[in-house]
Length: 269
Image (cartoon, rainbow, N blue to C red):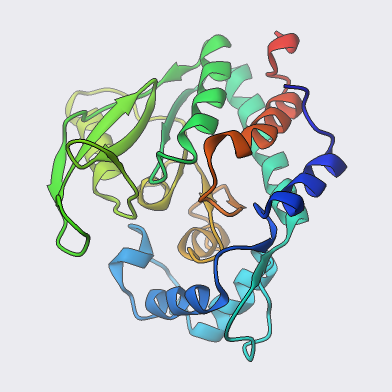
């Protein structure tokens, strides 16, 4: 597809609701921020924090980094993601992908949103692979049990076209857990293989990679503050704010914009 200009991408984000007024409800955002402050592992995404974050501090950071409404009195209804912040973060993603391509780095892609974000990651994976980057995978078949989600409760790490995610035995599953990324990094160490020089991921995949010290780009909705806090504390390179629940085709303009800025679009080869 023809990559959008920056102005066109901002307009597209607002028109679709990927940014601007988003479908993620304000009450859901505030509930998740409080649970993170209470150190609920499900919302920490495998991360630890140097600062003892309080609710008002999390809300202030999310207003600055993501663009949610800063007023604590706004308790219910629509919340927002600033599309300019989304595009600024995508610019940073593009610049880092260009660097990875020029250095032919080892790169790993993984997602807790296999039904929405995996296609975007595969698009970038293919572009980097075409420039000589090694796409890293590990620990395929690793499994773990969860007790707080609807059954089946066993999650299995799989890699499809170079992108990691977990399945429940029959279907790709949404996941916040850090366990699969931890297992992948441990397997690389056990096999005396080098860790990735860059991870592009979301949810617990991104959190666990950043916690382990791997240079990581994360993608996060406005109800997942952990990656934004991790970026603030220096554990992630960049966190891209966006509504992460759309169908894969809706993200194609974002993917094309990043490739064009990075000089990795097919016609730039």
